[in-house]
Amino acid sequence: MVGLQEGLMLIKFAVKAQGISHVEKGAPCQDAAIAHLGLDNTVGVACVADGHGGEKYFRSARGAELAVNIASKSILDFFGTILSEKADYFSQKVDNEEASKGEILSKLKQLEGNIIYNWRKAVADDFAKDPLNETELEFCNEKNITIDELEKPMFIYGTTLLAGLVSDNFWFTIQIGDGLCVLVENEENIKVPIQEDERLGFGKTTSLSESDAIKSFRESFGFCKIQGLTLATDGISDSFEPEKYLQFNKELFDKFSRFPEKAERELQEFIPIISERGSRDDVSMAGIFRMIESKPKETTIENDSKEMKNEEQVEKQEIVMVEERSKIDIKV
Image (tube, rainbow, N blue to C red; front, side, top):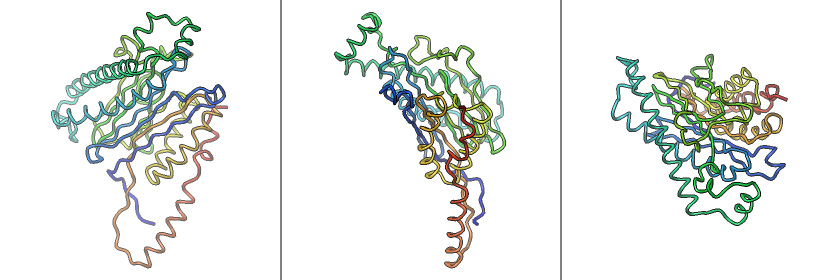
């Protein structure tokens, strides 16, 4: 078999599925997920959003889609700006790490404010282009949603947002609302980098639609090379016990870093099962991993043929459906 070593190539994935409870009620999927690579594939961005499920948030699916698209673009623009302004942030050694951390935290808060501003503008534009139709107006009357509330339509688009960036020597995540980010420092060190918001739980969450949303954002970052990160809405993260969810992410890294295309297909097939046997909610997940690349090696045609057969056998052995490897970890 070809020897393997850590490579610099980044890979991305983004999957989502309608929750089983939404299927049963005929409700739309209100989750959104997106992932991009930029700057000649030297930086990766992943975002997920969970549109609120209450009756009055009847455009939250749109709000979630707007959130991930706006956040991904804002983050790539943000990274390009600070990379040009402060190249020393991303060197192997930072002379004044504490000062740099303070500057990065300040810039992350600016980024969060930029995302909030652009999301609100996009919501206002969407509402202006597509005012409430007759069905929606009838629904508002039935639910006693007043005209005064509709003059500020942000709440009907309400959504959470989790977003993260991976580059060579820098990473960060930002979050408002529930869901979970997992950081893969290496195969042995996998953790949740963002502190839990004690206000969340029992159906409560924070939201981009809040007037003081900037105060509810949380963030984490580091000046180091990591192997990747994942972001998931609570439909996935709540379906696992905490330690089992970290193990699930370790398995994802192992698969994606070697066979990304097949791993993404399998994960897409598996997440509806997570919903059905776990939270029953909509489910979405996105992430960035480093690819495991092969060392170059001189070969003959005969050796190439043998190696291809060996690699096919190894792939069949190693790529077991995520369902089979992880099914015992889902809460039932």
